[in-house]
Amino acid sequence: MFSWLGTDDRRKKDYKFHEFHSPALEDADFDNKPMVLLVGQYSTGKTSFIRYLLEQDFPGMRIGPEPTTDSFIAVMHGDTEGVIPGNALVVDPKKPFRKLNAFGNAFLNRFVCAQLPNPVLESISVIDTPGILSGEKQRISRGYDFAAVLEWFAERVDRIILLFDAHKLDISDEFSEVIKALKNHEDKIRVVLNKADQIETQQLMRVYGALMWSLGKIVNTPEVIRVYIGSFWSHPLLIPDNRKLFEAEEQDLFKDIQSLPRNAALRKLNDLIKRARLAKVHAYIISSLKKEMPAVFGKENKKKELIASLGDIYKRIEREHQISPGDFPNLKKMQDQLQAQDLNKFQPLKPKLLEAVDDMLANDIAGLMVLVRQEETQRPNAVVKGGAFDGTLDGPFGHGYGEGAGEGIDEAEWVVARDKPAYDEIFYTLSPVNGKVTGANAKKEMVKSKLPNTVLGKIWKLADIDKDGMLDDEEFALANHLIKVKLEGHELPSELPGHLVPPSKRKIAE
Image (tube, rainbow, N blue to C red):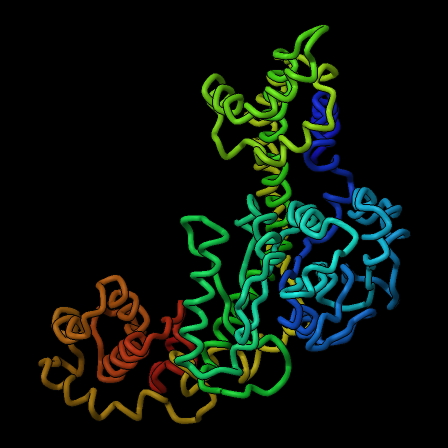
């Protein structure tokens, strides 16, 4: 499917793209399962979150109030339970971690793969990270570039989950640096405000507001990041007042994670387009620097001058080639990297190569989009299953079970019958003929709910079971019951559930 990738990577070598930015992509980057990266300060519940999803322990798991996870742990599916150390992991061509070798032994000694047979891991892999330090602890050197490792993972994973503890929202310098390293991957980021059952509702509102304010200062995007509130572990809720909120938030987060396998190919294609656009801009930058360098004398002084004025070079390239400012690499990082380079060895601009990249973006990508969509339609059930994802799918503990349109689902008596006497009084004021009220008369009463016509129209379709354009007393009572469901903040069902069908109409419904 991505057979032209090799050509693309050859183009990037002409301008040392992989030395400046990310390493070349390999088959394993496309063949492996979607990955979820968990990031947060120590004791925010990252490891407990994985344990909650899997509903079982995994090798190397340690949980505690102090920094306990001091390693990057890739939790992946395997036929047998075990641990693969980092140095062995980065030489395995079937794993997407080979390029992590560049971070050296200080990192590889703290990188392991925990394998275990678990149904959740048949669809996704999860990366647990060391707790981000705060206070005095963050002064202790890790021995490797922690933010750079996270940036490497961020580029390759499908979802980044930032976890915060509702009790300590202080964002340390290291955490702030990490969040900035995740820039350009905002579309992958989701935020979880964890351990929210341990504080009262009023305090929770304040904590949520403080978190949004703190994130807004660091992330610096006009869009508001999605924050999920809850307690993602299997312990009893300390303060159960917000149970319904936590259930709804958990279901939303689970749906987001469950969609990853279905959207994995599209995400990889999206990341590939980002790389191609960055490679094109990189070629313009490198060739511009090459063009300005003298052939013989004054090379070092000219190099310093060009690096100092790189911002102006960015603006000139942006103007000349109509390139968006968002496609350029980080200015400060690029200046630092150029210090160690011999600018005279850079390649001049090769228009044919850039034309080939443009052709790829305009034509090859369009063809791939069609193939990806076809692949998605052939795999409609590609969702994460097992573990916590199956815990609330069916039965009385599913989200919303017995509420809204689901009220009375397990009762022998028709639930609408409870309020039917009150609805009947209204029904007989609407001049029924042969036991039925017309649509016009029913409308006069239904619009008193102040619900939009689109909603009332849906309620009418659900309530008019025999489809004769009129409502008898049972259908009218059902319509009012559905209005009540909607006014209480619940969603209407797409089809009328069996328990809401009036007893006298159940043969018609069948």
